[in-house]
Length: 546
Ligand code: NOJ
Image 1 (cartoon, rainbow, N blue to C red):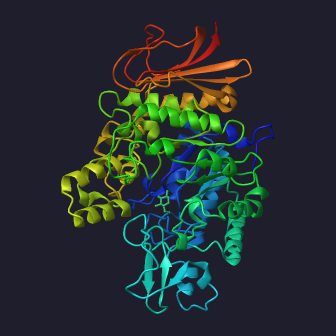
Image 2: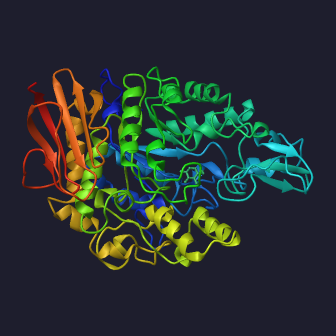
Image 3: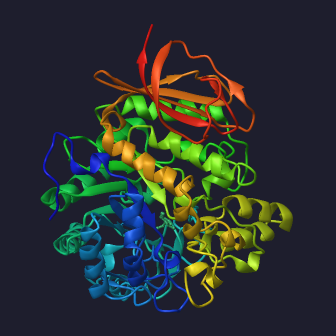
């Protein structure tokens, strides 16, 4: 297994991760669906960007009820994406480009077509029955009123058994029973098998939900959660030198010190969402839209930055396959698309943690506004029906879908302006964003001032200056409604990151004087040193003079 020489920091601490949603990245066999050989073709592009690792959304065998987050065989590749040989080739070829492959482990649930579940539902005495979460009941009386994330009850009746099984997501994603040590052992053996194939790391899907206690209506943060994770880590990850990232919607700064304990007893880092849910109405679903509270956003970032300093590690992200495109969401996807995309990148990459770039973010890809027939995501399709049934009008439902649908992030990668955007030679599984004729990788790579090259430069800076990795964070101007300003300090080195989050020019006054060298900025000509034009962002290396 990997890796670079040991320094005081683990290898992944200055790494930048790029997330690939395989079905939308690059199709190599003309079926309109991205695949592993397609990713192999694009490795030189990723090396040029400068990333260190690819997080691959699930490619294991799956009926694709939730686009692969419903796995029916953890040790095989879905034919839609290729074969195990393709996967081995990807792992090896990626290494030749200095890139590690992180695979997505979906361990909270399997597919209902997994052989464990097919066995489990045969009888209550089947050895696999207890791999899942069952409760007795009658057809008219569910164990309780818990709801599934994709709509409807979290309990599904199996008449032959006279029992319900528990599913936190779709009915085709039965929850695994982590209380069962035999199940846990099978999972560890499967992970070791992947490690032997040369995997560089794992992303653990909704890992905070594995220790569910449905009788108490507990999903995230069950009482045995950290015991399970520590055992998992000891039996598997600690035998290698991996990057591991736990997706945890229920994380807070306190439990993250456990999840990402520098003693390596759990994961390398968490992937938590507090900052990204700030335009959601309090206590409401993600579909109930609210404006972003920018001052709150800064507070949340500052809280995570300071609480985890030297005792934990966080992921830095604006996007993933479950979230809308950030430039449409909190930037400006019209006149200031390029400026705001670079500003958002600057704010994020200046902080402490591991930056994640979601495919197309480096091109400034935007949201889409399709008619309902074009959407493929199970959550979106179910939401639409559920809200119609509840009596909502179509227009507000579509407004929410345009703003928040997961398919915003899943439209195919925009490589060039040819038919199907260079993604495929056939009609893609999900409609392309029509703006691919102008927003595409070919244009971005040939323009030295592009968003792509800006990301490339940010990645280089992280490698060049250790202060990006280890510097202590301090927030300035916390109440300013437009400006985010912070420093990062390590020994004698200080970085100053300043950004205008909005589209009006603003002058700012910092509480200290300084001399500085400008490391990066998204505007060519400098104006007054402390006047920031719409969405302007800069990073300085500074010396404070008072
Ligand atoms: C989180 C994943 O990111 C999402 O795409 C998926 O639908 C759920 N977990 C269920 O696996």
